[in-house]
Amino acid sequence: MYTMLMVTAYFVCASITLVSAAASCGFSLAALRGGHSEAQTNAMHVASRSLALLIICLIPMAYESVEWLTAAALAMILSQTTDAFIGLKIRDNLRTYWPAIAAVANLLALVTVTKP
Image (cartoon, rainbow, N blue to C red):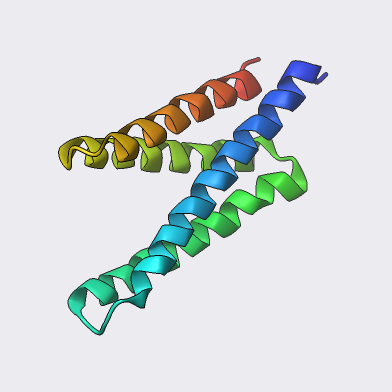
């Protein structure tokens, strides 16, 4: 039986996951606007992966599947954590704290959804 807390946590987790994937996809698509270079080729590869991850993150919103949400959320938690470490390395507070906060919030919501 699902409690109101579990349903709320599910949609909070799915929303954080989806918004984070959309932001990542948006940044990677914006990087494509450069000239023809090796960096732009790399941006194309990143954009294709970001778009695929965005599509995967849409599935839990449409089909309320804890299994799909768990897979998508874990992928985004890893991505957010990596982004936070990159922000730390380049000494950019915004690029450090926002992904770290999103990762922790996403993880807390996911734990709430998946706990027995």
